[in-house]
Image 1: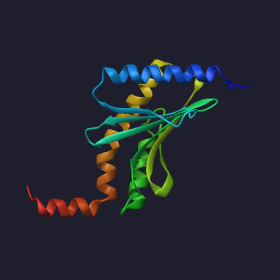
Image 2: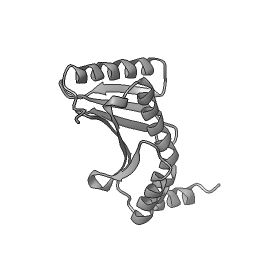
Image 3: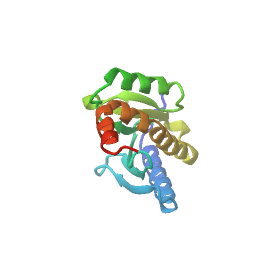
Image 4: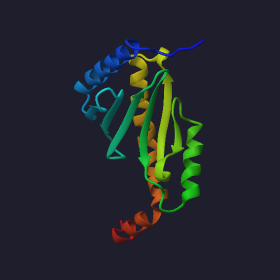
Length: 160
């Protein structure tokens, strides 16, 4: 009935995630940093260089049954709250393996999880790549809606 993983199985997942992340980062200039949580904390911080969003930070957290992952996309909207959240929710229908969620202080996050039985290098690659692509795709629209007056004033200051 249970897929509860006990050490050393979880330790093996930790090693596999470490090896995969470090191997990928060595060959990929998009990776800015990879760090681990506190000793004994099975959590990774992966910072990627974005094009639309300057930095994309992905947190991977290894649980007893799942690998949880999340990206901080945007702070709480300063304006157009309903439209920002509606836009994010409508995008959820096109996402695979992740969804937009409202988190602490009403910030927007992308979140998801994967059962440990499915975790392998290909899935880790899919998770990182998907979160990167979803963030890059959504960020320009969401930030312009959430902070519309800032974009309007900068457009007035710099007419084309």
